[in-house]
Length: 152
Image (tube, rainbow, N blue to C red):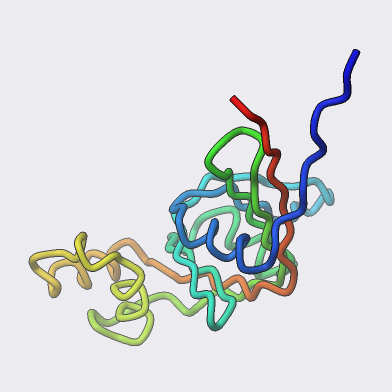
């Protein structure tokens, strides 16, 4: 039996590029029991600030976990099953957006890609308030991941 190629670590630049190319990942927070709580999340990556941003509602379980223990990890799948990026760090949860167009509402609006911006910005900001939206900001302190080069 022949040994196949070994996974190769990805550079910080390649990992950042993978985070920027994808939109969805699996966010892990820490439950009271110490076990991970996993959830699929849409995210926004700011490579210069090394911050991942997530939009969610204030009543979600992950928000409670992060308020109690800010450690979090995001796993993002690469272009194939053998490549991935992991971003670890500490998260903070914003205040709830309470006034259409407040700072949190504007931050949430900025997270939307230009092509997907709402036609009625005011209605969108009002909806964010009604949903009691917050921003989770994961300050990335460690990036790691691998790829496997397979001819095929």
